[in-house]
Image: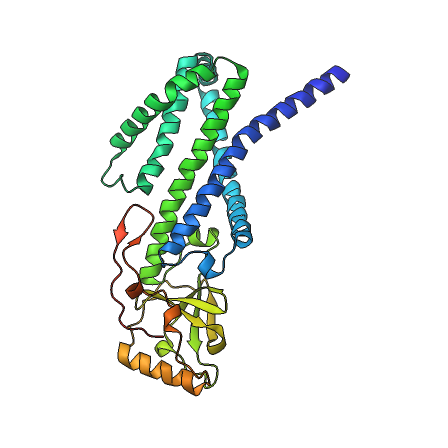
Length: 335
């Protein structure tokens, strides 16, 4: 009885070690790529996460929450795949399981499958470099097979010689799987951020990544007069006594001192299904009106236009996907 108990405990520990050797590399790779994706996401609005008041601790908490949600979703997918594989094995009277064991027993076959899988994860990296435009499924499979065969086939075959090498191969494949998923998420985050910047409509992917989809109306503290004609502004964050706003009507990012700005009409993740960005306020009228409002509020100095990060102060902006875009000239300083 003791021997059976010890055998069962060893089997359980072995199973946990196998699961950990796969889940841990995937989680680390996903965390690293999500960190890069958050930087690219805020780069669409021409600021860094730090300029939006997101420090390392805040970003760590948001990304850990995103990883938990991804694990929950991945568990459902993995459970469904296990159920499908079991059904296929039952339908084939066990031939599918014997075929899988036969492939694993042949080092070159197992190394080839692992090499092609790792090569496929490079497609996300090629998309990050904007090299996958116009590519079809056949070209994706071909590129994956070539990259995997050239780079991974022989090393994986050498790793199959010993049990420690086979365990190392699992870790490498899991890490590359996380990297591939991470690059796919980066592309989706960047695409959704571009849609948000152009139309004001957020997405569930941005919310899962911890992006603050919060819209406000900025007013002067003295009279309560709405600035920018009462246009809803995307509040990107706050840092060093200033708010960072994005105006989707003018397609520009700017900053305002917190002491001379009051936030009203605050909406967190609003339903912008029928939302359209408002028309920009004429530059001259907006500048004169807002300067007069700030002066009447007792600031004693005009609004800090130098704190803005508007397009007129920058050159070409790299969007993170290998493309370079030159920001359109501002419709006006507006603040």
